[in-house]
Image 1: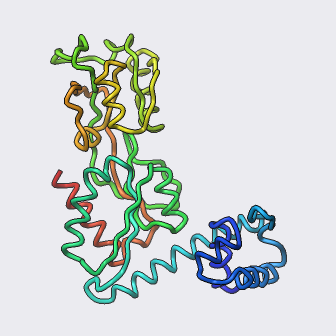
Image 2: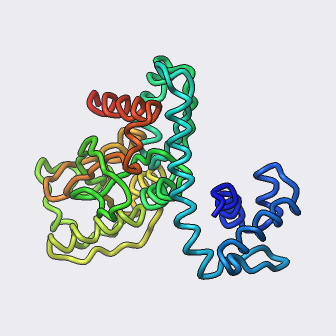
Image 3: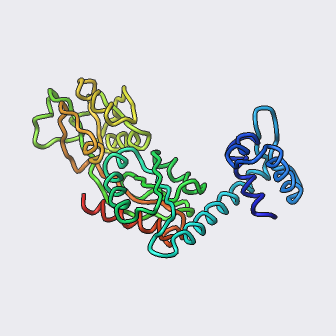
Length: 296
């Protein structure tokens, strides 16, 4: 099986059509179609079903795509190793991060990294942890800055987890809330309040913590924008929980923040494919993220 044709097939599968794959590769559509047909001949059957709306993977195509993603990831790491033969003179790192880290940890880390390694190209994309981890698995990203509540993310065996830090979760209240002036605050005392939920993982954590305190939270508003969450709280529309980094990235002047050990913590770390830490450019960015996080 020709690995070059496997990579062409991967581009077709990810792009969703022959024409889109041709544009991405800089080829003509007949050239892409010819390579795909030859690969299908090699494997003994169709890998995609063609239609005017694009392509759909067959069972064989779905099976091969997983191997093609792994191949693309390995080839990318090999390219990075060769590009950075001496003192990181070249190379590229693709980082994906969750939103509040993009606003707090990442800018300082990338500033310092660029100062130390100006020849290394770093790209950044924002995504929630599940999507970020998927990007690393599929070979479209090298590092994912992700989080999980009250422990490391579930281990699927495909990625390595490197813990960076742990941050507390805080209660966020309207300024005129009866509990805003209390020095000690129990979660159970907020059982009758209206709650504002965040991203799916944050919402799940909120519900679990409230249940542990003995009540089911009445969630009436939900948004994964931590600025919008605080605006809703400031308007008196409910109370919420937010991790410390979200409040560091933006703190609404009209909310009150209270700490409580019962709210748990958020674990922050890096997810990457095994072996990525041996690629010089990737390893250097990992080290910079470790140092930047340690100083916060």
